[in-house]
Length: 339
Image (tube, rainbow, N blue to C red; front, side, top):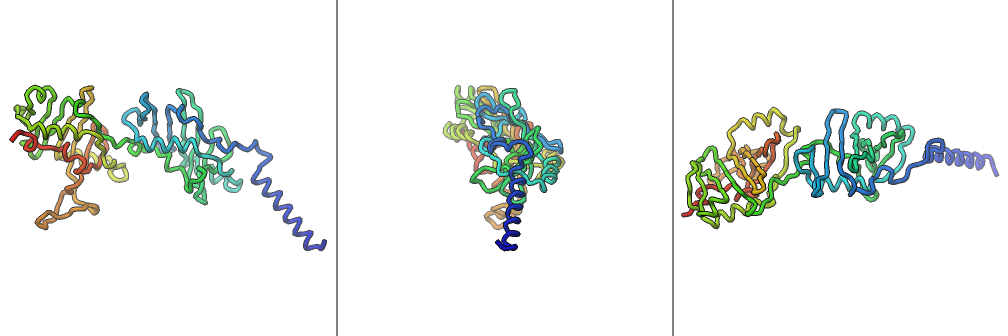
């Protein structure tokens, strides 16, 4: 065996030993199971609390009907909840973070990490610190409470990182469902058009059933077109907003400014179960994304004919609603009264 061959064998042996020491870390605690970060029984999870160093936080709680609630106020959007639960169930350790990157990973978790507490009943079953993506963008920096070692965590077969699934902005968790009622569940409905009060009206279930009447804006009884009222009552099923604007689009000051304007209309819906919904619709100025910018005469429009800004109940956020989806909800007295 010549000298060069001996040197080559020595280098290979040293390289192999170094790789073993870095990857296996025999001087540290035993390697964790691949599913150490996962929650196998996601059906047992009753609440998830997430917070960051900026003071932002969100509490997701499972209700008795298996729906989820955000911060004890509004329903959560179920597909986003299911995505988070499936992430908690499927995520696995991809690899330990190399020692050379350890301090960097700890710094990321300390400054930008999302502390995620998972509960079953009142019992805290797991606390995970979720960081940003790893340099190769195939994993996510994560650390278990009480541990010292950071891992790259991923979902096998999924290319990407998991941080976007652990968001803590309340409005992004909120369900887009506004209301979903069958006709016989509606006790009353009132709509007031501020600029055209002559088109305002109110429907009261007992009044309509007794003499096929509705009330105009002056609370005067008006005979109604029963077919058009039927169309109205069927329009409250599966009604969703297009989306909500967060603070990056509308600052609190801009929202407050909008809410001081005169609404296009206000509606109040009350169910037979006693639940009430109040919505204020505001005209939306024409913008860069407005599809129809001119009327039939070629005049440039100032108001977007397809969308409204909407304030729902007492939540100080702005939603976007498509006129097409709420067209029958926004019926007018002239359409409903008997000809």
